[in-house]
Image (cartoon, rainbow, N blue to C red; front, side, top):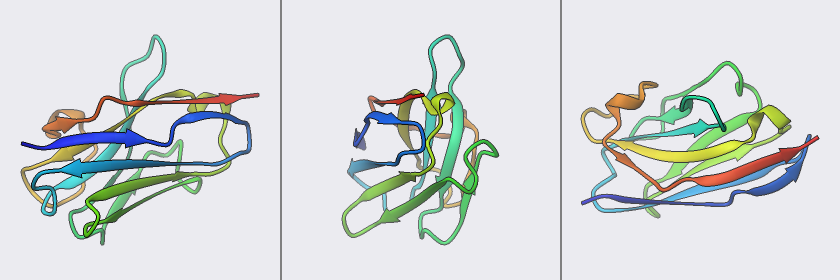
Length: 124
């Protein structure tokens, strides 16, 4: 059984930074991990993903160059460093784990486990 818990959300001014953490329990060392977000009235969208080894990463175009995903397998934790935040980054951010295959993927349906989400609010 895998459980994911996100930390680090909050309120920040535009241009500021936040670092989200996702602590995993269970067998996640061979799982690809991802971050998704959902703004009010919008569908959940892909943000970033990282392979099981951490050697491969992908980003949505909207966050490329501003967000960085990383993982520490010894601590079973995945991070999302968010810089130069914009009001349009405001959303609930979810951590997810994909148990089938070690490679990165951006499709939510390919993820088997989800955290409860953490709110990120960026004020203008």
